[in-house]
Amino acid sequence: EAGVTQSPTHLIKTRGQQATLRCSPISGHTSVYWYQQALGLGLQFLLWYDEGEERNRGNFPPRFSGRQFPNYSSELNVNALELEDSALYLCASSWGTGLGAYEQYFGPGTRLTVT
Amino acid sequence: KQEVTQIPAALSVPEGENLVLNCSFTDSAIYNLQWFRQDPGKGLTSLLLIQSSQREQTSGRLNASLDKSSGRSTLYIAASQPGDSATYLCAVHTGGFKTIFGAGTRLFVKA
Image (cartoon, rainbow over all chains, first blue to last red; front, top):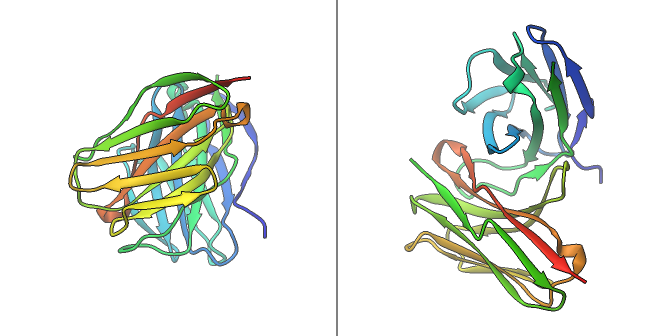
């Protein structure tokens, strides 16, 4: 069974540009989560999508947005890139949510570098 | 506000030693707690998931315990090996399905 996949592996952008990161969950999983892991800051929760809807977001500005497609894959968009957006972006998926929430499985991440 | 703390921040042990990693959280209203390992520059690998109603979970040489009332979890690694060298993260899943991660314990097992 294929795990969570993310693309691209690496992305280099210039300040002010837009970045699009993609995630495909494990087959059968309906929830997708996005996290940012910046150097020295640890893992920060960004966004949670379930059944095509944004269910929750962390403390990030609106220029971080995304969507979930009917096939449950997801896209994270970061507009007006800033240098501090440079980080490893991790996507995770699970097949259950809410009470008794289920295990999250992580992808390998996308390394975004903003110059 | 939920905060997750992991102690120690780093640990270096000789191969074969048994060790304990600690995770504490400030709000006991959690759905579950999950332990991960992360190799440098890589994604996270799930090790163990403990539901809020459970006290412990075991997988091979790993055993994780959960004491919700005291806001603590421990990850016990038996007979450590150089391949265990990685950063170990604990995460609590809370209401609104936010996941709060600790900063991690960096483990180095010397051959």
